[in-house]
Image (cartoon, helix red, strand yellow):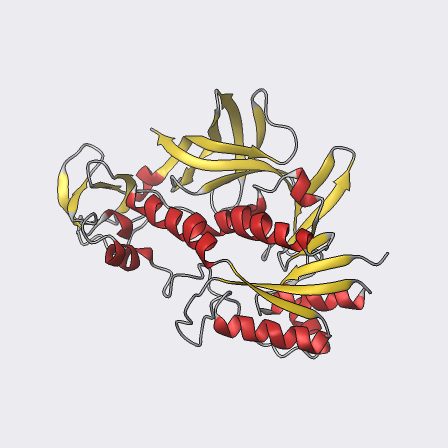
Amino acid sequence: MKKFVAIAMSGGVDSSVAAALLKEQGHEVVGLTMCFNLAEYDGKRPSCCGLAGIEDARRVAQKLGIRHYVINLDKDFSRDVIGDFYQEYLNGRTPNPCVRCNQFIKFGILLKKALNLGAKFLATGHYARIVKSQQGYLLKKARDLKKDQSYFLYRLNQEQLKHLIFPLGNFTKLKVRKMAADFGLNVAGKQDSQEICFLPDGKPGALIKAKNLKTVKQGDLVDKDGNILGLHQGIPFYTVGQRHGLGIAKGYPLYVRGINAKKNRIIVGPRQDIYQSEFMIKEGHFLNKPFKKKVEIRVRIRYNHKEAPATVYPVGDKLKVIFKDPQFAITPGQSAVFYDKDVVLGGGIIQKVID
């Protein structure tokens, strides 16, 4: 059945192939490219929403014979994603801007604009799957587990899932690149975009310090007992689990164990001290039914973390998670996502680790 589908086009190979597949399936397709006024930092790792990406998306749309619109969401992105990113780092937390971008920008503002254009669906190049069941819409991992992006999508709700299509969910990245070449798309050999589109080197410290010179100051590096071991260069330069750049020698490797922004302290310790089991979650979100009692599931605490068995307990408006086995570097600010096999149940933001 022919559908009117808007496709979010970044100018990368994934969204371009998604657009080509939708067109090949006979749907009416219109391309939407978000513009955030981001600079191109180098030619090696292109920004997903920079000027070069917009031009590549335009060329792909022209090749496919579909309409293409550029939507400037700079103010929204600066407020909801970049602003939050800066503030979280200043507060000693390590945020995931891709989660917020999906929540507020792609599947918030852009989805509304797509529906206002008359489209019934918004498609993206995400590697994930949506399956309709008796319980509602299920968000599932991609077939290609190496590229699976379901972790970043856990804040979707049923109303959004009803209007979303992920055409690449059943394909491997290798297959997607081959399809790009078969479709004759100019982006077939284009490198994947950098993970955080507004950070040129993936390191937030220097950029945040440049914008907050008065608030980013040196402070004490201490062990868990409060003994001063050295000086740190500013809270935003550190994250839990970090080993390099501490500037102190102890005879054995030291890692960041915690961050106390109020006291301007970085707590460090040996690797075995970075493994912990219990933490609290705020801003819990569920794609279907919320947990009313303790549940034994699997939990992933960052994108490249293999989810591990844990018990989740509702505690007022928050959630408490206890892993069966201690996990390395449970990091406040990151998202903890709940899985039942390949189905995403929900998740939330790691608020604090319990010693």
